[in-house]
Length: 134
Image (cartoon, rainbow, N blue to C red; front, side, top):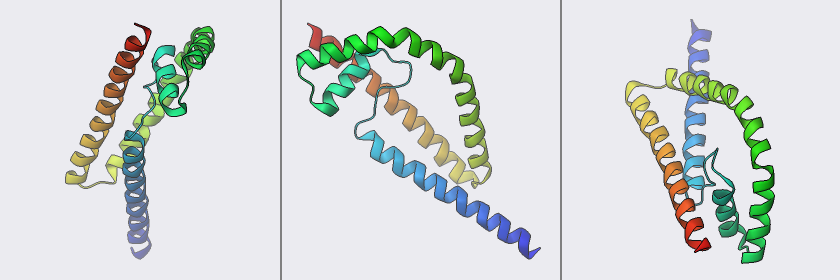
Protein backbone atom coordinates (compact mmCIF):
# COMPACT_ATOMS: atom_id res chain seq x y z
CA UNK A 1 0.00 0.00 0.00
CA UNK A 2 2.86 2.35 0.82
CA UNK A 3 4.46 1.85 -2.59
CA UNK A 4 1.10 2.44 -4.29
CA UNK A 5 0.78 5.79 -2.47
CA UNK A 6 4.30 6.68 -3.51
CA UNK A 7 3.52 5.84 -7.12
CA UNK A 8 0.45 8.09 -7.05
CA UNK A 9 2.44 10.84 -5.40
CA UNK A 10 5.13 10.54 -8.05
CA UNK A 11 2.55 10.55 -10.83
CA UNK A 12 0.89 13.63 -9.35
CA UNK A 13 4.26 15.34 -9.04
CA UNK A 14 5.00 14.62 -12.70
CA UNK A 15 1.56 15.88 -13.74
CA UNK A 16 1.98 19.08 -11.74
CA UNK A 17 5.45 19.55 -13.20
CA UNK A 18 4.13 19.07 -16.74
CA UNK A 19 1.19 21.41 -16.12
CA UNK A 20 3.56 24.02 -14.70
CA UNK A 21 5.90 23.56 -17.63
CA UNK A 22 3.02 23.92 -20.06
CA UNK A 23 1.88 27.09 -18.32
CA UNK A 24 5.37 28.57 -18.32
CA UNK A 25 5.83 27.65 -21.96
CA UNK A 26 2.47 29.20 -22.86
CA UNK A 27 3.26 32.45 -21.08
CA UNK A 28 6.68 32.76 -22.68
CA UNK A 29 5.36 31.88 -26.12
CA UNK A 30 2.31 34.14 -25.97
CA UNK A 31 4.53 37.21 -26.19
CA UNK A 32 5.44 36.43 -29.80
CA UNK A 33 3.97 33.19 -30.99
CA UNK A 34 4.77 31.88 -34.43
CA UNK A 35 1.92 31.57 -36.88
CA UNK A 36 -0.33 28.56 -36.39
CA UNK A 37 0.41 25.34 -38.21
CA UNK A 38 -0.97 25.23 -41.69
CA UNK A 39 -0.69 28.97 -42.23
CA UNK A 40 0.79 30.08 -45.50
CA UNK A 41 4.08 31.64 -46.51
CA UNK A 42 2.79 35.18 -45.89
CA UNK A 43 2.05 34.53 -42.20
CA UNK A 44 5.44 32.91 -41.59
CA UNK A 45 7.20 35.67 -43.53
CA UNK A 46 5.46 38.31 -41.38
CA UNK A 47 6.50 36.45 -38.22
CA UNK A 48 10.13 36.18 -39.34
CA UNK A 49 10.13 39.80 -40.44
CA UNK A 50 9.09 40.87 -36.92
CA UNK A 51 11.49 38.57 -35.11
CA UNK A 52 14.50 39.11 -37.39
CA UNK A 53 13.89 42.71 -38.52
CA UNK A 54 13.92 41.72 -42.17
CA UNK A 55 13.99 44.52 -44.71
CA UNK A 56 11.61 44.49 -47.70
CA UNK A 57 14.07 42.69 -50.01
CA UNK A 58 14.73 40.01 -47.40
CA UNK A 59 11.01 39.57 -46.82
CA UNK A 60 10.44 39.08 -50.55
CA UNK A 61 13.29 36.55 -50.74
CA UNK A 62 12.09 34.62 -47.67
CA UNK A 63 8.50 34.64 -48.98
CA UNK A 64 9.75 33.26 -52.31
CA UNK A 65 11.60 30.41 -50.57
CA UNK A 66 8.58 29.55 -48.44
CA UNK A 67 6.21 29.76 -51.40
CA UNK A 68 8.46 27.53 -53.52
CA UNK A 69 8.46 24.78 -50.86
CA UNK A 70 4.97 25.32 -49.41
CA UNK A 71 3.19 22.51 -51.31
CA UNK A 72 5.83 19.94 -50.34
CA UNK A 73 5.76 21.02 -46.68
CA UNK A 74 1.95 20.82 -46.66
CA UNK A 75 2.09 17.33 -48.18
CA UNK A 76 4.51 16.09 -45.54
CA UNK A 77 2.56 17.69 -42.70
CA UNK A 78 -0.75 16.29 -43.90
CA UNK A 79 0.68 12.78 -43.63
CA UNK A 80 2.18 13.41 -40.17
CA UNK A 81 -0.53 15.64 -38.64
CA UNK A 82 -2.97 12.82 -37.75
CA UNK A 83 -0.27 11.09 -35.68
CA UNK A 84 0.68 14.36 -33.95
CA UNK A 85 -2.95 15.16 -33.21
CA UNK A 86 -3.50 11.68 -31.82
CA UNK A 87 -0.44 11.94 -29.59
CA UNK A 88 -1.49 15.41 -28.41
CA UNK A 89 -4.92 14.02 -27.47
CA UNK A 90 -3.34 11.12 -25.59
CA UNK A 91 -1.00 13.41 -23.65
CA UNK A 92 -3.83 15.78 -22.77
CA UNK A 93 -6.04 12.90 -21.62
CA UNK A 94 -3.26 11.48 -19.44
CA UNK A 95 -2.58 14.87 -17.88
CA UNK A 96 -6.31 15.45 -17.32
CA UNK A 97 -6.56 12.09 -15.54
CA UNK A 98 -4.03 13.31 -12.95
CA UNK A 99 -5.89 16.51 -12.13
CA UNK A 100 -8.61 17.28 -9.63
CA UNK A 101 -11.96 18.44 -11.09
CA UNK A 102 -11.16 22.14 -10.49
CA UNK A 103 -7.71 21.65 -12.06
CA UNK A 104 -9.32 19.92 -15.05
CA UNK A 105 -11.54 22.95 -15.59
CA UNK A 106 -8.53 25.27 -15.40
CA UNK A 107 -6.52 23.02 -17.73
CA UNK A 108 -9.37 23.00 -20.25
CA UNK A 109 -9.57 26.79 -20.09
CA UNK A 110 -5.79 27.06 -20.48
CA UNK A 111 -5.85 24.92 -23.61
CA UNK A 112 -8.71 26.99 -25.04
CA UNK A 113 -6.77 30.19 -24.29
CA UNK A 114 -3.74 28.82 -26.11
CA UNK A 115 -5.84 27.95 -29.15
CA UNK A 116 -7.49 31.38 -29.03
CA UNK A 117 -4.08 33.10 -28.88
CA UNK A 118 -2.89 31.11 -31.87
CA UNK A 119 -5.98 32.25 -33.76
CA UNK A 120 -5.34 35.89 -32.82
CA UNK A 121 -1.75 35.63 -34.05
CA UNK A 122 -2.93 34.13 -37.32
CA UNK A 123 -5.33 37.06 -37.79
CA UNK A 124 -2.67 39.61 -36.85
CA UNK A 125 -0.15 38.04 -39.24
CA UNK A 126 -2.61 38.01 -42.14
CA UNK A 127 -3.56 41.64 -41.44
CA UNK A 128 0.11 42.68 -41.14
CA UNK A 129 1.01 40.79 -44.32
CA UNK A 130 -1.86 42.23 -46.34
CA UNK A 131 -1.08 45.78 -45.27
CA UNK A 132 2.61 45.38 -46.12
CA UNK A 133 1.73 44.48 -49.73
CA UNK A 134 -0.54 47.50 -50.32
